[in-house]
Image (cartoon, rainbow, N blue to C red; front, side, top):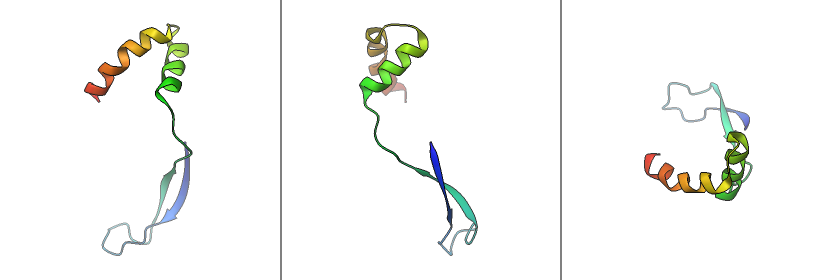
Length: 60
């Protein structure tokens, strides 16, 4: 993930005038890409990961 350093511009905040890191979005990741990465990392099949993914949506 990449970050950009920006200066706080809201005068009502305690951090006004200070710098902070802001995440830069560089695109979307599909469920299929996540499934493939997890399967490779765990050394299991994509079908097994696909079976677990709906359960994750109820937990998180």
